[in-house]
Length: 317
Image 1 (cartoon, helix red, strand yellow):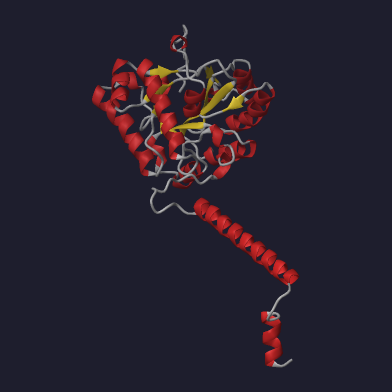
Image 2 (cartoon, helix red, strand yellow):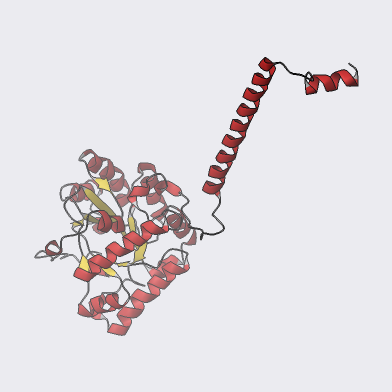
């Protein structure tokens, strides 16, 4: 084909017919529409993948086994938007304004919270395997002295969006300590947790359930809420898997905070029991949440926080 013929083919006839003009207009309109759609799609995709230059970056990446269940409110790095964490902290502040401690949430919904004390330990990763497989959130009350001993486990907890909270430095009976020693036990453990990259803890569980007015004064200055429990699994006595399951399932109630352990000894019975407890309570219509989420969604009634007679005679916690 000669060059002049090729140019004529590209340009079209010098005097296009009306039909050819209509065809060209339709083609230009279609191409313009496609270009506009592509531009809009690029803007949307770009906005979802990069922060705006005029707005601060907010880390909201969904990670771990909390990622697709944002409503369950893990508190670890990357598991929630900053707005969600702020809402949970506000819920803690509201509870603190009414009471220095809680032992359960409200009874309005069938939300319950699994809590694990004394870790991280050698069994924590195996416990996490079960929680991840069953997609059940939990709250961990950690000993400061253990945090540095299990850095990989702690990082896994953080990446999973697990709330890491304070259980003192090395598990003393708080009521037996001076005000300064209590402050050091709580603050040093909190600092060890924060140094891992986890948010500074807002919740504290007193070892052995031991506390006094001084404990609450120290916690108040640190803006921490003391978290006890309303269901004791008694797993620390190693009574057997069946007994642990029975202790939890037979005593659970809406708003329950359940005491379990992932450290302080061999916790293989606990892990096996948790594997049975979660499906059974789900069959009963219960939904597992973290303690911060329980405070946000189903805040406790002030008149239900008093301790029943004979609370914690075995010194659990």
